Length: 94
Image (cartoon, rainbow, N blue to C red; front, top):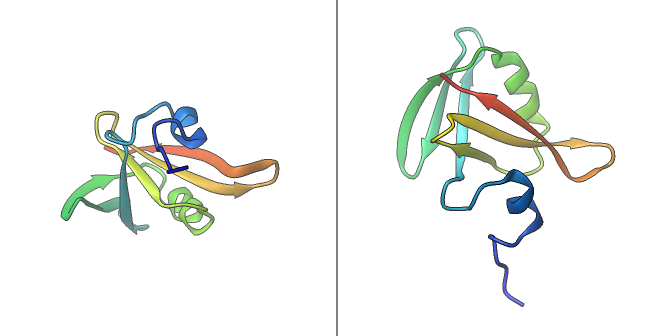
């Protein structure tokens, strides 16, 4: 059976369709709080209110980070006891 991202458990739990959630590679400057996202071959610069917390969460991520541009939200799934697919944390970027 082929993988269907729209009916996958993670897509339903997040509440987004794969068309709106984009996988990104975030680069964080912990001193200034700037976050550089590599989205679909281009770069976007944002600010995070809690850069150290975001850095710690990225070090514990169990799958790639997702960027929700309409909500300006970075979604991470981190390793946690009792959460097989990871516990989801979201960071609002300015």
